[in-house]
Image 1: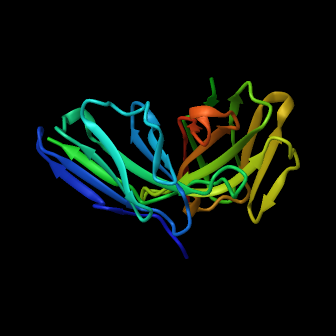
Image 2: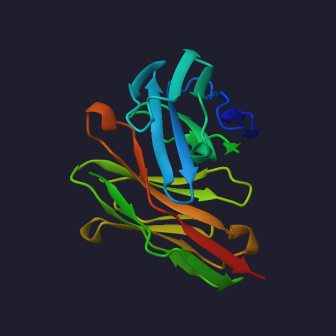
Length: 115
Length: 118
C-alpha cells in the first residue's frame, strides 16, 4: 500500500531556529504539494512541484520559507528563521498530473510548534 | 477565483443515524474536479472520492454516498447508519482545470467536524 511519508512527525523548536521538513512522495508520482493547516486559516497551499520543478509557490512567505525537490524521491520545506506564527501542521501530498488519476494523496503531516 | 463553503462547522449525531455533510462550491471553470477527504483524530488526510464536473451520477460506496448537483453547485456527502469510527473532520475540495499556476491546486472548505456518539 503506497503512501506519502513525512519526517519528522512532530517538531518543537525555538523561535529563530531553522526547521527542515521532508517528504517522500509515492513512487511514480511526479507532482508534489506542500500545504499548511491552522485553525484560523484551514488548509492552505504553500507550493507545488511537477517533475521537480516549482510551478507555484505564491502561497509561501518568500523571506523565510523555501521548498525544493533535490530528486524525485525527496521534497523539502525549510523555514529559516522560524517564528511562533509558523506553528501548524504541514502536509505533503503527491499525485499524477491532470489527465492521470489526478488525486492528491496526503502524508501524515509534520506538526510544528515554534516556541 | 475558486471557493468552497462547508456551512456546517460541527455536527453531532448518535450512532446509526444518517448524516449529510453539505458542500457548496464556486468556480468559473466549466471543467473541474470535486473531492472529499476525511481527517480522523490521528490527523492524516484520507482521500474518499473524486468527481469530475461532467459526471453528475451519484455514487455509493458502502455506507457512503455522494450527491453532485451542478445546478446548485453542491456536492453533498451522506453517511448512512453512522458509526463512532466515522467521527472525523471532513473536507470538501475543488480543483479547477484552468491552465497556468492554478493547475492542480486544491481549494479546500473549512471542514465539518462530525462527532458520532455511541
